[in-house]
Length: 145
Image 1 (cartoon, rainbow, N blue to C red):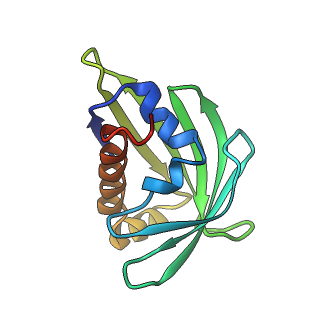
Image 2 (cartoon, one colour; image 1 turned 45 degrees about the vertical axis):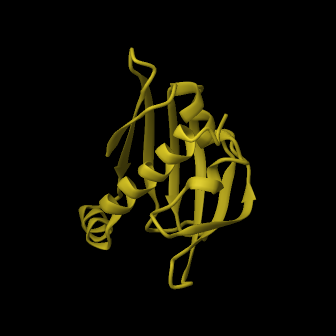
Image 3 (cartoon, rainbow, N blue to C red; image 1 turned 90 degrees about the horizontal axis):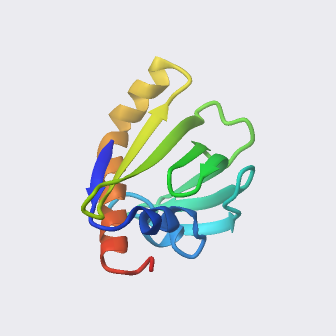
């Protein structure tokens, strides 16, 4: 998934790695995030509940594996349990365009084709684009600055 965001790369990256910003925009349209703990650094984790519009809670955990300032974030994302068999890897890249816009790209790698297909069937692609849309609105309205 990718999207062009009308904001500089450093600003878009900051929205991802600053604990005061990430929970403000993350998640699909209509979803809210309730953080349990957040430590955004290599080896750190973000534990949170994603709350659907109907009030259903989805416990999540992200472990930050690799961070390159303003260029790349690599995380393992799954349920908020140890050794979650449904955990998948997400790589997020940030590319600066010449017009001071940022191309952000999310790639997911699932442990099996069946798990990948199940996530797609659940709506992961649509939810991913909705999340990128929320990020764009957040940074383009100056909330991450």
